[in-house]
Image 1 (cartoon, rainbow, N blue to C red):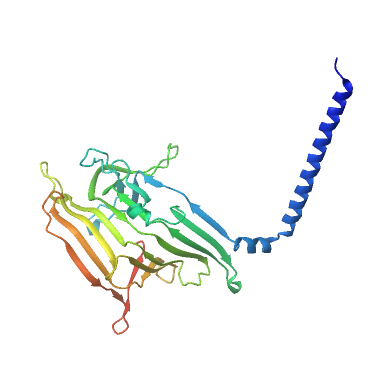
Image 2: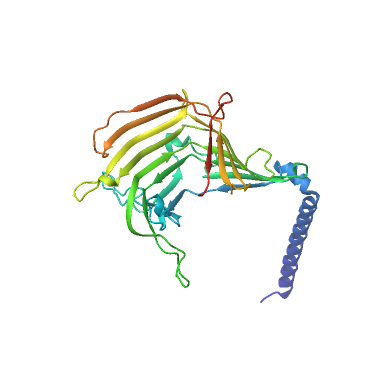
Length: 335
């Protein structure tokens, strides 16, 4: 026989337990809420280090099928051209490696990943491809945004670089924004790969008290290396003969008498002034460099190498005679 009294007592005990649990939970929540309320922005800032935004870009690899740079009016007839649009195109090389495996650029024109050489010595501590720290500063009423960027060492592979006639702009009702090229692609570079060490850059938008929009001030650990660079001469190509090629196995660049490469550059966007419509200016103040070119092959990459070329302590200067400054000034603009 079922004892209804016991059922009631059990129910009361259960209700009492739930009530106690709810009471304890509410007390805990209230205490935490009071603690959180006391933590204002200033307290949070002190607790975490400082205000601002940190962004970690955790990308392992970037693949780009093709890149086109269109010159919409071509070369003027008076200068030997046809005044029709042409393009520089970076695309896959369609090749396999000697062992039969697909070349990293067989399909894609550009493949970028982290540089895992030397047991990961060229990676960021976070193992991200890039880390950004973003802050804003009043600067006495002349405010700016500061973006401090740390970039991992990179392994950059570039496929075939050529020239091609630009296709027409997509018409109204087109199914994509792609323009691309048309006709024969004439290769000018068979490809190359670059390996870099970690780099840092500081970007300021607004007042830019550092004196430029982008400032590079870092040491690229392990220097810069360009591999498998091939320059093609299609003027010698016939039905039975391949285009001539100057092929270089490797180019290494580092500071004089060093393994690393120092980067000291300021990059500015110069606005319109008078007849000048503006340009990008890059000022480099780095010191002397050593360059080692390994395995120079003339005619084809299968030709015997003429040997290696080494340049020690090359220093460039800019400025007027009597007031030379070490470095270089490079400007880029349209025409």
